[in-house]
Length: 527
Figure 1 (cartoon, rainbow, N blue to C red):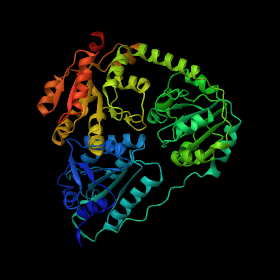
Figure 2 (figure 1 turned 120 degrees about the horizontal axis):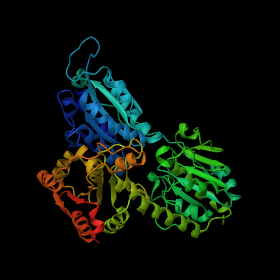
Figure 3 (figure 1 turned 90 degrees about the vertical axis):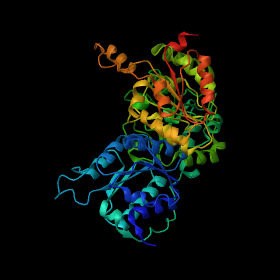
Figure 4 (figure 1 turned 30 degrees about the vertical axis):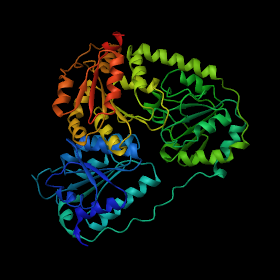
């Protein structure tokens, strides 16, 4: 039956598996809200569009399904652009739908007017397009979901003129038969297997795109060592003897990589935030597997390139791996010695955080999903916190925005009801999105929020000192975070010992709402 287009879009999204939408209604996009409840979709009301975007991001990372957000014309789109940029950097499937003005050229002085809203969205999205008809809107939604399934997932933005959202429209067509992604097959990996068969020290680098539970078996079978990117942590589980861990950014890793006689990189961009140097450090042949042609053609100059997803590559490898002669050039002692050295270096670089993290990890369930912010506490954690499962620690790696953890953690908790989710934030970054505490309270989410409060932008202060700049503008007055949380209706705790911290964290996972747990650098000195 005919409905206003805004309502039909919600029904279309429901037909494509969308069950949650994050956003904020306004007079310009209210027609998009007409059909949400009728379609059987839950709407989560954020306190700011930035929060809505990060919630959609966190939901997508936890569920594997696209995160969807509704925002208004102008400032609504601008406010969600930071999460869109973060999603673009970290390959997160997000669909942002906004209203737009019917005429932004001849008419001036309109509410929420921008010079070019569509172009603004395009600066941080995979694409940003305007649908001037119902059929165009349906076609763009279909295209977005098709691309989420077939190519590197990144945010898409669709804007629809207000008059079109109000106009009567026929229902959207039934979902298309989904396309089939080109997958690696056993014949495709034959050159890789041939090169592995003569390698004595093969080394794999597994990134967030590796996406398979077969890697531990594969690496064990062929005697290969591995590194992971931060996004690939947990890909080989715990205690694989030849796993160097998420240590690509350690300077000495280049020397180890140079000692390999074959390097296989799967689903890893090898960008600045992976390496913190220009080159990986390899001197041997590199084999590169990735969905993105731009990655395959980058300056690392792989000798063998295969455009495929990491999961199908792993399955194709496993199907033929019996023909590979196991290598014996790596030793577990070599790996263990390097990891112990790096852990000591990390502890020395940011003193006092490692023992707190060790205690915190022991208080967490094995299957906890963690969302962290840009804070020294998380930087250290990424180097020393061992992950038993992949895709259970989410961090704003690429765009590197503050304020990510809390709203993203809310989105993740919504996607995994009944399963543990935790947030790690720094005191300064918490200011960016702390109002989203209200959402977690409204939804009754048992969410531990670990707040590392060192009273300053400590990472920036350290960087200024290292650059011989007198530290300035790095201290801001903080509120009483515990009272602030309680004002929102959340629980709070301020443990003074590591044992008290562990108790507070365990209790928070079974609470009837979020718990803010404020810890300071003094906590480890109290032991």
